[in-house]
Length: 254
Image (cartoon, rainbow, N blue to C red; front, side, top):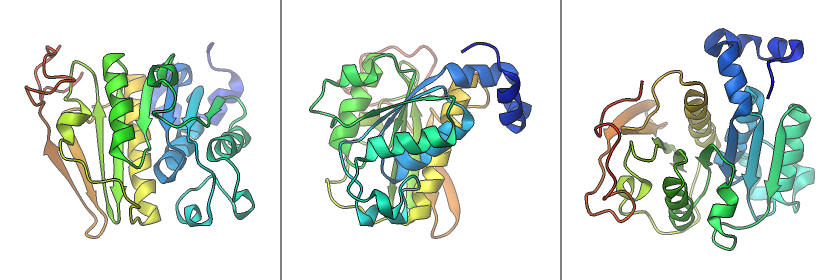
């Protein structure tokens, strides 16, 4: 992406006031993978497109169902039965025609994961099950790609930015994942967590702020309360246990 055009300067004027023109250019050059086009993925994709991330790859094998419409912002009643990834891509293009959106209708696990993350700078986790999350997070770790984890249930959600060689991996953060099941969810919870994930992506892209890489950020919407849980790697972890940290665990990035 070249220097910002006059149109881009006007479009992102209020954001440029925060990250600067150089930061906006970096956002435009950042290639995002959004894994899952459900509640989290919809919110993340929506705000990533509005922020001006120049390339977004969105992955989901499913089709839109009526039960999705309480929380998945990119879909309408007329979209029921259509592929989620394709429909989301069209909605994002309509919102911001200057970005590149690539829909992928393959399921994680049926397509080589390294192919899905090839050329990607940051992965946003919008998945709804841990087996798929672990596959993607493991591959991202091994390829040195930051993985922004997000998960939701009911009024509750969590976010953590996993940076290879710096933070613990997802298996250390969630050593005992819940079983795969249909998760109860309040729509606004996916909105809150998805927005926080894009905030993390903006920080990674621009070097602004402090990524949430040394703790798990927890949201409790039933009490309008957030908390932070310190995270540490498990020495015996087969993904990150043998890796040497570039900085000490718990130190923040500059």
